[in-house]
Length: 373
Ligand code: ADP
Image (tube, rainbow, N blue to C red; front, top):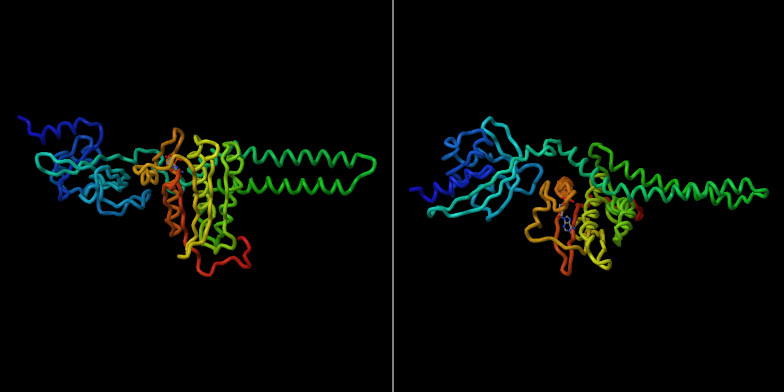
């Protein structure tokens, strides 16, 4: 007669995903065919071995700095815990993996059951992090493309209108120099406006190296406010930007930080899209904190986050949107961490979610005379 353990093992073997079960001391008691195939061992070779041979004690995968390596296979995790790890095949080749662990008691033995997803199969994961970051940025700009065209159309139309008026003034018998000057001045200022938008888009599209400089975070947010202006209008989302004056400077990469703010704002616009018009509001607040950090908060009145999703949203490729890449928040968190900062989310007391980005202020880096950087 089949024992409960054997029946359980047979069932796991029929499942089309790699599964490993281990006892309390991390000893592998069962591995299904898929797992053996993934790691390049036979099932017999795996059984009795340590889970550390599959998930060596190296640090967490770069894509998820918050994840604790190997914890997924240790008893410390709660049921259903998911971790991004570096796994290792028998031939020594490492690959990124996601491990989801739950616990179950079979024949009086507490077992950890771990399901493994091989991320090296994901075409996007093979790219280097810089390319991935660029891909996410280009995708955010792609979302904005229609409204950016609109943003540019306004000054271009005004330029055409003023140029036609100027021509008329010149052709008339009595040239009104004051009117002519005004039309030409408008042309120059509209040209600067269009140029400003183009420069900001070009800066975001560039594939450059990280460029650390002293920055006013307020100006980073203002640049992005300019880019999302038309998108917010099109989506009928009201925005407010409350940026403290005379912020101390931080040391950072302007484009990377713009990418984070752009991502938070576009996510917030998505979050409020099904709200009643009164709730289609996204507020951005920038303040200096007493502990030597500057905090950017993007607050929406959307559906908020479920407890389950609160952590998942920072994982690469997690998305609830049909057209989503699921890269924005994971890359944003990597950028925040690289700046010695933090990025996290919380639900608001009334409704919606707030995303907070804190960055350490550079010592002695205040803007001279309150001027913006
Ligand atoms: P994407 O936008 O491509 O889905 P992100 O990494 O930026 O990728 O976001 C991951 C997921 O986090 C989104 O699909 C969504 O489910 C959730 N999310 C992000 N921002 C918010 C928000 N402001 N309110 C509710 N959910 C959000």
